Length: 401
Image (cartoon, rainbow, N blue to C red; front, side, top):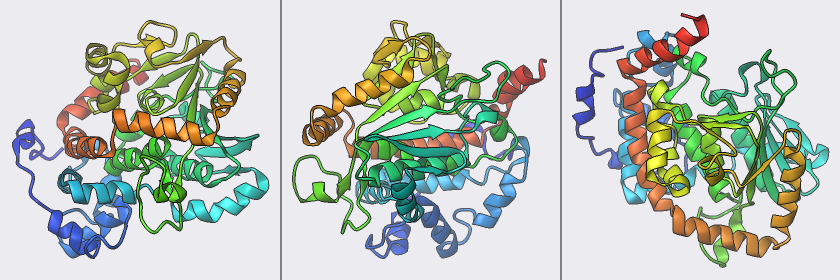
């Protein structure tokens, strides 16, 4: 990679780009997704961030041959997210259903299922079940899954017949796990090493479907995006349901991160939980923000920085997993847990959900974390150490060297 992305780059003070954000959003009167914000930033201030064409050119190179141009994107996003007013506007702007989700809703309402390629969404009784479907890659995540999962989550939130959401991995096509469901094998490291995974994958994932599962989304016709913290006018314009995670085989990397935004996690007794960030050389999403609340700081460090792996039925695993069951019992146990949860009634369920969220992860805490995450993840992804780590731990393991 380009020599400017040495460790010394981490000491550079970020410039203030808040004025540009106000220019692009017309004084914050226009709400844009982060992808469009950056396209407009490239047009409004040439040379500040790479253009879509330059990003596409970067995707056409192997990781070790890339020039690290997406570091500039991380710097701008960190500046925007670091400003309380602008950062809140950006975060909440991402908490709107995508236009394509709204367009697909009538089809979902009529057929009860939509296949989105890398994911599917299906209504099962009063549950909206989202299934990750990349069987050839052990349900590993990439840009395609991020887009599909956000659309699927949107439709569960938009659908009045879905009173709770379930996230599950589909059956995979792999000789080691024939006919088995796999929750997720995490980031698609092969695609990352080949240079095909964008920096924005990490940002859009956290601000998109992951945030929507935790916080909900604004109704399409909402006059503003205001996350409700108590009953009031905002509640009628907010879409939110509780979420349950159904874990089979393993939840690695991004898969394990998703368990931290669930209201209940049901897992096979021997399912593996892992955050292999130290082997990959990147930051494991918002796990640094959330995992210590579950396990304590010491265990979180062991997982994130020393690749300590836990089974679902271990002491640490049971701090994340609420219920362990035998193989082939996950689906039934998840449905039973959802039924028990919904017995409280929708008002009580959401009121308690919001109270817990306000106490544990208020939106401003998430915004501040994402400012740090935006720049530090960019530095990781544009460092020579990432290539070295992947060649030592991933490429070597796959080739048998």
